[in-house]
Image (tube, rainbow, N blue to C red; front, side, top):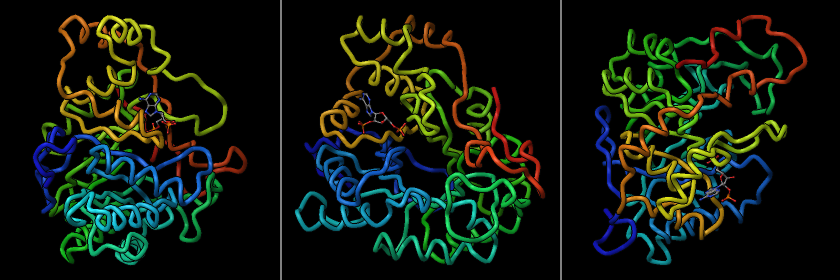
Length: 332
Ligand code: A2P
């Protein structure tokens, strides 16, 4: 645990209801970058994040960031920024090409080899989307989508926890329908659902469902997200007039208003920043509160989802063995 007086000590923690993970720090650094970044840049950003007080690190086989995240943790221990690897909460994710029952445990072992760790604190199914096994390509060919064996894959995820390779297991980008399918077969329920969530996509229905089932919600794209498709489509958070006005009145940045709002909803956010000043800024949300008036205004922000399962696939070709509707993620 964080030693008293360090910036990490100011970050509250959340106890997950399922699994054996240590309490999870309520905010995390993400390592998914929409433009290419070097191994060194990722490693340095994670080290900077640890230095300013982040103890919750998010990676995925898809991001190609597992090795630099692992190296940053090892370096942080060497430099005395951390006493040991146990001080950080590390999440990684099973990519769509790995969502086959016999590939789950080997994929996690590969992740652990890259991280140079004995276990991850949390292992997630990245999407309710299954693709033919093979190298990770982005975007994928539509013909590579195959039906998802929810029961078989979840059994293998449970095996990961039983083997101690993951302290807790969960999902990402799952709707209430997908969660119903997992809960119908689970002996270990998912501890977490990591989804797109911010003031412009508040996920009220999903959040209420997850509270009811004891599933903790983590928010990705808490600042509206990066421009993954390269289309320059607007950002409903950093471009929000409502948030800008609240930020100005409170003497905060728009990012801080959004991150504070998410934290107040009992949701753990993950934000990628490879900039030390912004990393610090993002942590400065625990010693002030939004007012009731601020919250009411935020509740009125028009809702728009940015990330969909369709974004994983090339615009060329067609789905041959699965319908996009089976995997798509629209709820509210
Ligand atoms: P940068 O790394 O240059 O800070 P994601 O939604 O995937 O977590 O990405 C967050 C995006 O917002 C990144 O492009 C990141 O860029 C940027 N960002 C992170 N923190 C802040 C902040 N406090 N203010 C403005 N932009 C931010």
